[in-house]
Image (cartoon, rainbow, N blue to C red; front, side):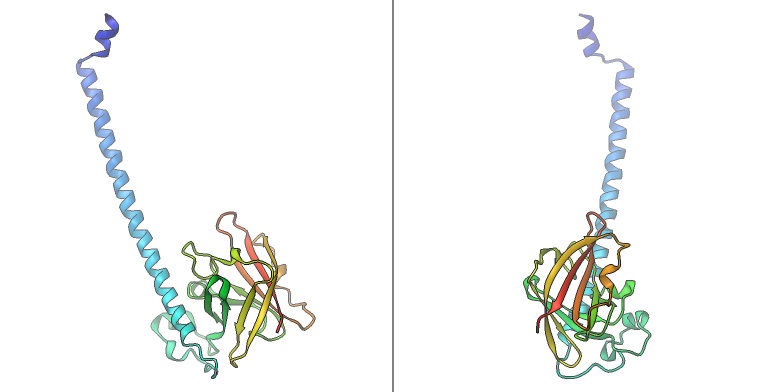
Length: 219
């Protein structure tokens, strides 16, 4: 009988506990809603900037002329955005990279900076496109399949096309794919016996390693 009475306790203390629980629940719920709204705003802000950068990169690629050289400035692309991140009087775009297997086509920018990496793959070290040496190209790995995010799909034997400023296109075959710590820079070596190589570099967002795709000229 006492157990039944305790189960149906209608004492003031029981009512207070129920009220406190409901109050805490409402507070937690309201806090969760605020966090969700903030997260959504941040997500769309980041996505907006990524889409804007990708649009600019695609515009650069679409206007890349295979019959004429770029001038020694960034020409018609001297927008406020680009003026803020490029100050050197040298070709802004030095070539074009195309990988048909993963539907990738982007301009290759002349140097690697934090801001330029948001726009397109960049020359990290090495010669100009299609010259002897090891052209190392760095690119971001975004979760929306842009830039170098799909390099992990590549296999040995896949073809990479590199266009240079003279309009020449050379094909490179993938011969090695590996992951290395971020401190390992051996893939940038220029000891290549006067051969032409292209090394693609991006990050692995899961384990923090660097994904390296090495390619050798076959044409």
